[in-house]
Length: 166
Image (cartoon, rainbow, N blue to C red; front, side, top):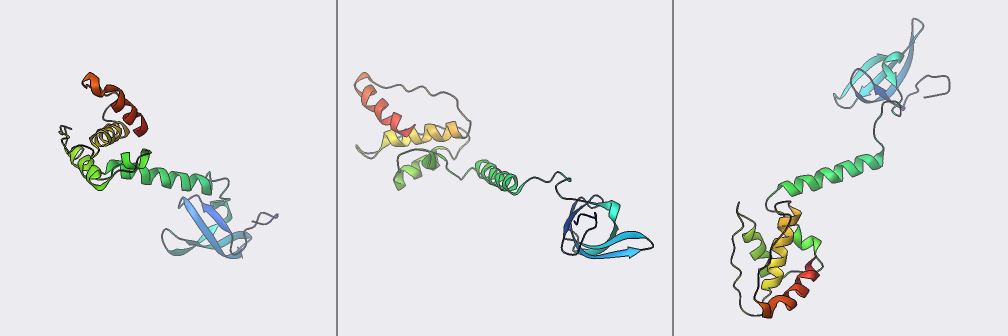
């Protein structure tokens, strides 16, 4: 928009009627009124609008580019969280899980109720699997607290290992 208040070809304006940005193609003076031929992207149509039907995009309250990027990213995250096959715990923790641990995690959280016995060989990472399952349930908002019951010999080493997982 120029200082004289007229739109020029190539300017983007806000159409109050169509509630979306439009691109000015041509400025006309018909019977003493400023009229513009505009392209409406949502309808893929070229229309004729009067000057009072257009306003600047800044006045229309359209969010900034950064706000749109943030909103799009938040929507993608929310959509990913809604899918049951996406695992969040491996991304959140400081430990890189092995494939068999990811498999155990996906099997454990695949059902409606989490009831899964972790019974691997010694040294295969049952504590990491348990920590991943607890982290996944917490990230999905399915649990707030977790009770860990263990024999006294295992308490200290297991708590140290679980603290690494977050």
